[in-house]
Image (cartoon, rainbow, N blue to C red; front, side, top):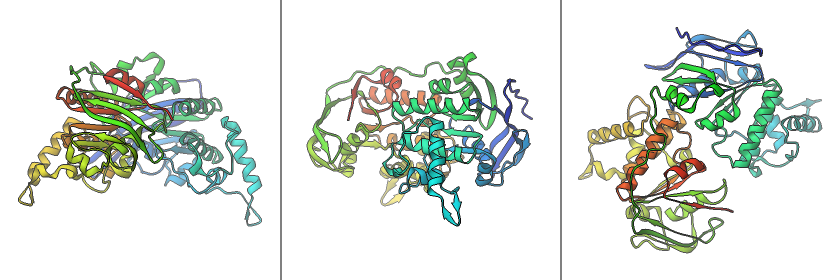
Length: 479
């Protein structure tokens, strides 16, 4: 039994989870997890990829039933029969992948599933009053109620999700990696919104791999490791190194390891590259053995630039010079020339979700295991197992379907796929998004070693600190 003690507070206890355990077949996903949250408090739930954070929140939100343990909400026993029962009890979850109906308006999305009806007809005027009141409570009264969801920014979409939870009388809101796709201004507004929620007495559980964000938003923390709660405390009294050590189970000497490398001659030249809408007249040169960082606000055109270089998006004007590849780029030609792309959208185009880890890692370079039209499956399994170990993918075997992995482990599979292709130039779009700090250090080490081998890395990131620490040069895109 877990004896982890929770520190007392003067606020009323909102949620208690005691010795919660869950198995999936032979895999023990959660073991005697304990967690407490008080009204008006923001709790950081942190841990490495595969530590059990997602499973624990699925238990809390009613998507998964625990095998053992006890939960109380506002002092009453809480064991939801499903997500709807959890929502009715006042627990709401804001997922990393937002769940709005794109063709419905702001008002319709907020009231979806909880419409107000009068004489058998939807009371649109009454719904507008309710939604306007909730948006004012959140400090976002300027959001137009009749605007369609597809026309909103990602930050505005999150506000709509939060408003939906408040209309449903939520007392506890879970945020799962909420800033992963937000521009800086939207991140600041989200933090302000969360502060408003806690001031109004709601409880917040905040999941993030960005420890500086956690410190901005949260009062206390709980650490999960290997499915168990191993530490909790007050963030203001805990150093970053202590948090990392508790998450990883070991001290992390260097978050940004430095691998000596010297950039050489120009290997790729991009001249006045222009796509259909983005990018516009971009020119830059990449050198052998260089880590070139590329940043800018969300929507600045970073992803579009990589897609045009790789040939996924149409090129209107300009040229890409690399090993006789110029003007007309296609993914097939670029891959054969030695260029690989790690997509920002791992679910939509970066991975085959229903295929195994082995398939995803090797699909782009099956030639390593084929002879006379036959695949050497034993050789492939051994190679994939080595890649899983190198980038720290947590899974039972190479045969596990990617869709069953956590988001962070899926990102590691996508990265292993790119590394497995042994390309000369690697175009990495947000490679550390959703990955824990321990694995980030491993990725930084791998990127440094690639540069030391003379390979070139174009590293797109919204995280300025990592760009400043690992890149040789940085380019900034705007509009």
